[in-house]
Length: 202
Image (cartoon, rainbow, N blue to C red; front, side, top):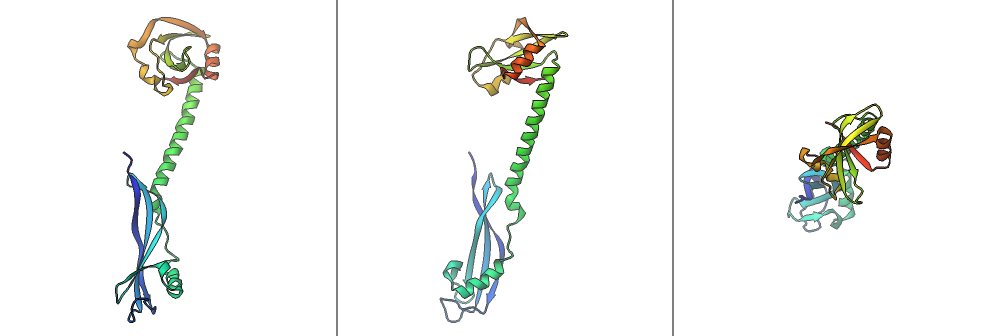
């Protein structure tokens, strides 16, 4: 379940003097409060979504939204709210997202560089995730021997139709005992064609 919604916190409060309350004869002072609203996700503030202003007559206690008051009051109030800014923590969620995105981009780049290095310099135990001859199905093969210009692999007997889940198939009991050989050039070609799309090294 995703928990999301909006909340508000008070950003500023104060008093406006020498103004007339539209509701009573005695009112010459109004108390005001400025609330900032923000959207949250899992209770983490994501970004601001506006401000709300409440004004109350000090005499009759009637409350007003700013837009319902005369221009004189609105102009005076606008001077009070001019310096009201959203606090930095209203943007906490965006900062967290930025860090996560940066980390994922860095991890993806590092993974791509590692895979290229593993293809160039194969080692016993490397596991290749690949698309099987049966289109739409994926499996793995594992290197069990490396020579100067060739590698020898054992195949996984199990395949799956989810490309991102092939790591679940990498279990000793799933591999055959028979092995097959490829030239290193063939492996590079399969990787370039995305037939081999992931390389895992312990």
